[in-house]
Length: 150
Image 1 (tube, rainbow, N blue to C red):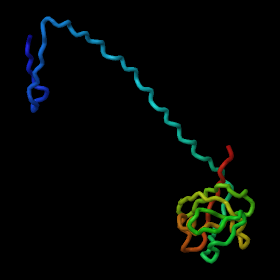
Image 2: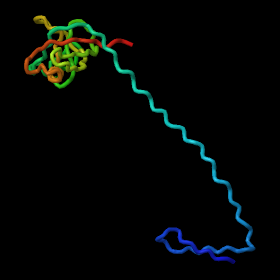
Image 3: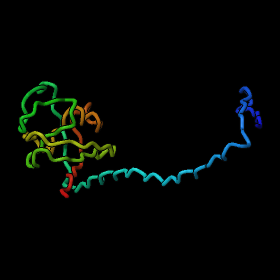
Image 4: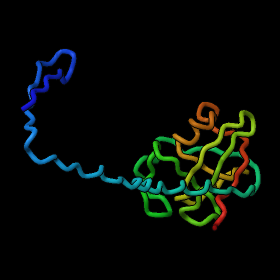
């Protein structure tokens, strides 16, 4: 019988293993062959929407006095939502509104009809007007682009 002493780690105790010369040799099986794990397919992000220009004009925004009032779509007006009123675009349309003076843009969802006064082309929610930088002035020149149907 042979004794083999070998530290497992630099800071571990010695381990003694007894090996008998008369014992049958241990058979070692080959290491298993590991096949590569297929990478999980990451779905491609959806394509960015395409917006088609549809004109320019003056945008105004709804005042706080209309909070909770029903819009033409049946939703209640929420000044914090990015919504707008347009005379003819279908309800649910997404419109990119860009401030002509600053280049700031916001995407709004059409949920109401209007504006019905002056030469305005769109009425924005208060949050949309704030993002465009026209809240303080009350109105501003904008360009509109509607999301293209795929």
